[in-house]
Length: 427
Length: 159
Ligand SMILES: Cc1ncc(COP(=O)(O)O)c(C=O)c1O
Image (cartoon, rainbow over all chains, first blue to last red; front, side, top):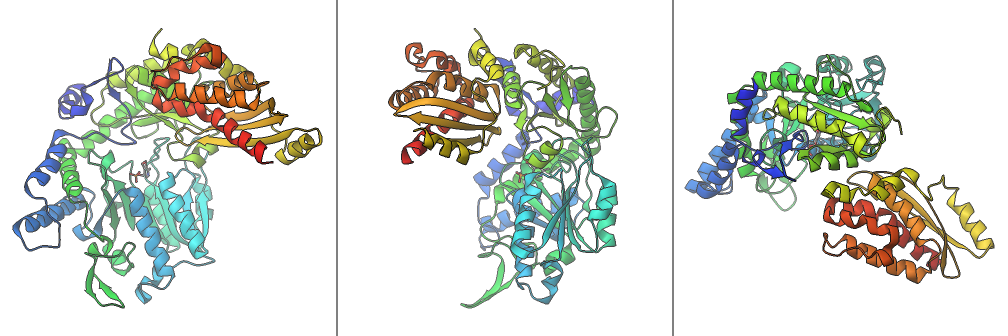
């Protein structure tokens, strides 16, 4: 991909063509949420204009059409990440997908789901392992699961450069480990974790693996089968899709044995006043009226990404990511969180500007029309580990140009002088 | 003056570095009992702005209806830190009624989305936060220490 391709891509994104604070919008916050191409917006509108009906619940024509489109979306998303169609469960977002797992395991720990679900049950003596770089979404549900079951939560520490301490990992993941949950790509440092190595550690001790793929599925070709993880989660709104839709991938044989999390309509076979029988996955985990338009729009987003080519997207963003860190290294008083130039990374970078709080940095950039994320990016433990309370993150996507990266860098260089901090100052 | 300059007035940037009243706080229980022995009512409040992680702990000492001392510790953006610094300068020595009136005026101005011009007669240096009122996302930052003051003041009265 080149800047010329990007210009063509940008034409498909109406929101990018606006002025913010007197400047053309420079949107560098796709790590938080991405923008939608016209095809996605139209898919959602077309659904409401022509096919709106409850899925899996009616015999009339619209209900049949809606159900077909809803299930076709599942097939498309499954193929996009190398899963079988029935291995894809719709959720509201990645956070809900992780909670679905945690509550299903919690229910299994109470004996629900019978003997087949025992493989998910946790109790005192069992260990759940996460990493120090997790987004709160992949930390707090496990903390809570540990509290509910008496299991112990342990973590793989992070080194000074932001990468996982893999030597320590070999110790932390041990015979008591039942579950290993970690992020594929860090939303703060842009580090891509060595999945194969971590999965091997888990396999050695028979632990289940949960992969937080929120920052990778939108940006890299991801094949969950090739990665050999048991579960993976991601969010539609970070991959050109709408808000309100997320995905849980689970290996078919595992989903089959898991007790449900949310219960109610649409997830049962027979019901009497005392008890109910549940449907097979994925419906077992999709109680209530579903996010139909969102699933259909997400399928349109997947089409957009597939047509562009995930290899090309990944290569472009790798280029933007390297340009970001190379440029940051040239600005005095700016500390990059995580590894620098030359190390494989996602197309994002978070920095600490010495003497200027991230919120002020973000305000200064916003004044120039540049949208970035400031704060702890839902990763307080990682920020604490790296010795900062907050940072400023620029994150790119397939619609960002090299000029936008350069504008961000040039504007960031003006921050310290504006706030009267000499470059190289420390707090 | 650009919008950004009206938000970050020189006086705000200066206070964010000078941090008047900032101190390492001694244990609260100690301060409360020491205060009680000398007729001071001491209380503090810790406030967090969850959007950006700004934190302020403000300790208030009241004697016979007058704000005699204000100290704080905290971390955060220049707006919240400067606001704490200016608060200590502005409210120290006022009666609690005067302090409350000033706080109300400050809050009303901040929430006005730029419609109410800050009254320098009333607000003194705190009038510098006038530019903040045009940035709704930053109003919380400016209000943080003032909210802490309000909560601490109520607590001194319940003692
Ligand atoms: C690495 C990572 N995990 C999990 C999440 C949570 O995603 P969501 O808020 O869409 O559930 C995010 C995004 O905020 C993320 O970046």
